[in-house]
Amino acid sequence: MTGLPAESPLGTLPREATVTPRTRIGTVVLFFAIAAIAASAAAGDTAAVPPAPSPEGSVTWSLADVTSIALKNHPLILQSDADIAAAAARKGQAEAARYPTVNVSSGHAQSTGYSTVLLGPLTSRSHFARGDLAWTLYDFGRTGASVGRADAQAGISRENAVTTREDVAFVATVAFYNVLRAERTLEFQRENLRQQEALYRQASAFYEAGVRAKIDVVRAEANLYDARAQLSQAENGLRVARITLLQRIGVDGPAGFRLSGALPGVSLPGALEDWVAEAARNRPELRALAGKERAATESLRLARAGYLPFLVGTAGYGYLGQDFPVKETYGFTVTLNYPLFSGFETREQAREAMATISSARYEFIEAKRRVRLEVEVSAYGVQEAQERLSARKKQRDASEENLRLATARYEVGAGDIIEMTDAQAQMVRSETDTINTAFDFAVSHASLLRAMGR
Image 1 (cartoon, rainbow, N blue to C red):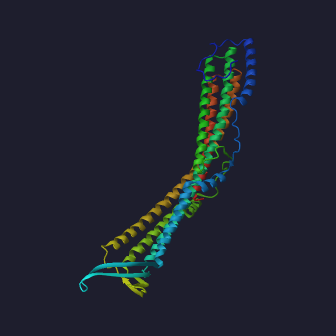
Image 2 (cartoon, one colour):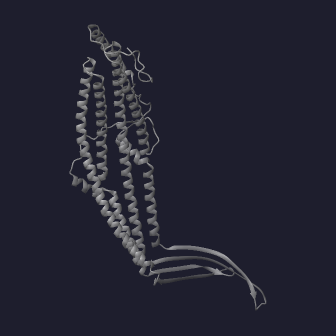
Image 3 (cartoon, rainbow, N blue to C red):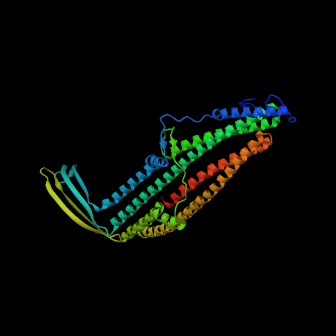
């Protein structure tokens, strides 16, 4: 009996054989070969591809752990928090107009000139220390509109931050499921490789016993190399999925993490219209657009206030004189400023604000339609994935039974290598499709939750 091929080219077997008539001696040799194959396959099942050892000091993350880590560490979350702080500061700047401004100054002045009376140079000196206060007593709604606009923009920043958090959590969830998908795929590809190794041993034993042609061995060898290539691809897919998950949650390690958790088993309760209504209430994007319309309304109020006057009061107190002790000075004024003409700037600002309000309203309408579309697409995606998963499971069961029958027929010499390899290929496709469909359902489930704003 020949062992498993190394990385050697195809067709390097001991000898070429033709199928001989099945004599009693050949039958005895065949049954001894099958018994030897069964023993070697049982040993090869555990030795062909050893299971990956558990990394020492690794952590185990659930889906809740992954999303929690992402919400704490992802740079986009930190960026959105900084945007909220900046918007709050801009609101504080707008509120500053409600308070007076106070300035304190002091100094010394000296000048030299020519005196026509004294017919010579004349030097004068003065010393001063002064405090001035200016306060806008009434601006006919300018400050209130500015503060209202800044408050609306701060609300937009908060809702955008909520959107960012939901997006980060969703992307982390998808990455979590992709790692589990890759692990399941790798596990199956290892099992597929063990089956291909067993088939190669079997075909080689039949060939050496003189009951099968060399084409059986060559075909089994080709399938074995294909299984090795698929296993290598699955291993790389898992590596990529793991580093992608770390990137999605905003951390660099630990590299040896493990995941635990089950796929969602049932669909969400409720009807489509209930989900659409929930999305309309929950989606932060819609609240942000409502805030955008409010900010535009406050901008219009601010622009129209440009047609109105504003009342300013100033007061000052200090000391001034050429020689010490200096003299006390004080005074106050109240000024009413009325902007008569500014080159139509105020009119154009009002027109811009009205156009911005209309734009925000249409954007809100389109966003509601887009949210409804997302909910409907996600809901239908969940339904389709669930139905497809049920069909894929039945396909896998049928493929498994087909492989069992083909294997039994081949072992007793009733079936050929083509029937056997076709059954194995069908099993690989059905198992891969079942794994992918199961995780497609999980991702569709998460997409529906995201579309509903949960």
